[in-house]
Length: 141
Image (cartoon, rainbow, N blue to C red; front, side):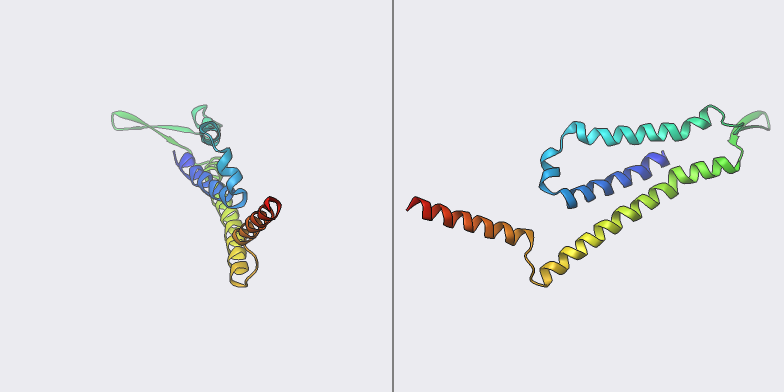
């Protein structure tokens, strides 16, 4: 479950990234199917990462008799430690740092352009609308 949880955080970051960089086009193209695709992918990815444990990858399972019962644990092999660390922590962490760095830089750039008086997308859109309204008035006269 840790794999799914950390990868869902990455999915939220990707969604924010796409809203920021694709804007209205992304919002118009959203659908239930497009929302479910990455969720299914995350669950399939988690199954792929966890399946070696179920198939006893290189003797990972360790059964010990404690008292009158048996317990099941895992041997801490180097490959298993690397595998689980990459899947649950390091991979999602790097993805989040990469995505949010890009988001931060873009928001910082947009903030600077508004502060310096450069035309923002909203002011450009308003200028285009006013030009179109002016052209319509001229052609109707």
